[in-house]
Length: 251
Image (cartoon, rainbow, N blue to C red; front, side):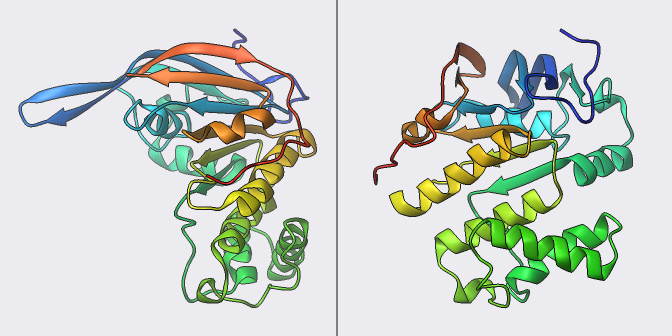
């Protein structure tokens, strides 16, 4: 593995590399080991699918890779940062803000904000002027097909539209690493297909390393790589040729 990776890596360059990740949670008087010495890497331009049943450790892996949940053992090298978990909490927060995008199944939208405001808020935290933030947010929402819904609040949007707002919010930052946790689980086939195609585009056109955690086997066709995790261990790792024209059937 490389000693570290580049901030603006080309397709195929490592974006994130982890070795020996161990995470334990306390349960009553014992500890449950959720990650058991996991090694993981992801590359720019790849859509990497991490699949496994509920409780397999896949969401915990995402949290450890992204600086959200400190592992008991192991290290994460991401972009130009050697050993992410050696940084202070404030520097880890800044790394996430500057370089990472997040998409969750629960959308995580603010009820009182319009679609445009949902996206501009995070860009202002990055230091963009209000005018620049508005322009970039508008562009991101147009990219996900919501140019006509800029002023709608979450209560006025469908589930699929809410998820597309969340994707626009993530893409507007131009993240080098994009984490998606069960992004299609609450969506029907039509909306799920829109979402997975946007994730595919984030990898292919934006050059992001897209890491998608899911137990939805319908998504495998779009992946460059499928990693199976079970009981806290990676049990299979397969590279494949994605099919961008695949059809996502309903559940």
